[in-house]
Length: 195
Length: 179
Image 1 (cartoon, one colour):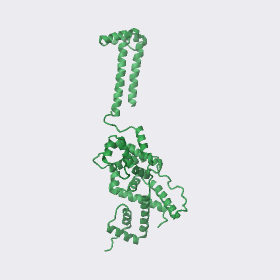
Image 2 (image 1 turned 135 degrees about the vertical axis):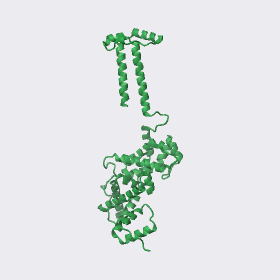
Image 3 (image 1 turned 180 degrees about the vertical axis):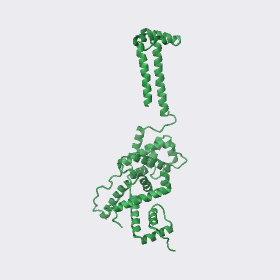
Image 4 (image 1 turned 45 degrees about the horizontal axis):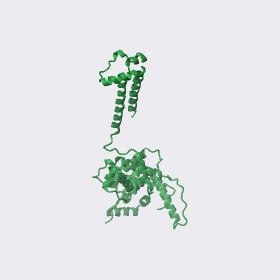
């Protein structure tokens, strides 16, 4: 049964997966893998680290799925499992080992002369690389809030539920994280060029 | 009616919050008025917009086509969730340990019953005091089996059997503690 990304699996699929039904669990993985990878990518970086972390989320999910209460919505519970696994894993990492690739030292791509506005494209690419590197410098707790906000477009209330935090704490972290990113961008040689 | 006046801190807070919620009309008007008159807040708000836009524009990579297969393969290699039919690990270890100890005890008892203790005492000297060990009452069938076995076992077999039994018990105890 194909499940479109962004639409959660049916409750009976979750119930069957929790009972040990292999195909149902595969359906669950298919339904959530994009969202989980998107979160892990923002938390841990590109490539193998994010994909490996995503797989660990599902391995842990398989272990704890029996504890899920079908009377409650699945998505908030799933996000909680996901954030717990990722934050626990990142706590034990070597310093900066799982940071985003590049870390501000990525070689700059030459502007494509065929592009309608090569200067603008190169500038945007630089800015995106710089922003990714600066996100990696945020504390894990701030980065988790930013990742949930921008990977799934969650509201403050949903983020608070996923991280088991008060809404005001989420708002404060979002404000501080975006402020730190803005400051870092302005201080960088590439940043602050635009008004 | 003119919009209410905002401090720079309030204005920067609203400039950030508008990325997460729709501002009320009076908040939006107050923010707009402040940004019109305050160049530093205008610059900061523009920077905040740029960060917000950059974060929105970030596209995470799509999962690889074999992602689900890899998860399932790793699950096959990892222990699955316990079902009610499966014993918990601690109970399983206790059961295995108790079974092994019982088996070793049976071997030890058979060694004591089957092997001639007098001959063992002669072999190992004072290790087994033969006079102090009364034989328990056993059924006639077992007695005849013991007698026939004793007839062809060499004298030193008692010592070897007893030593093996003791070694088995100690080994099981050590293994059980390690688990």
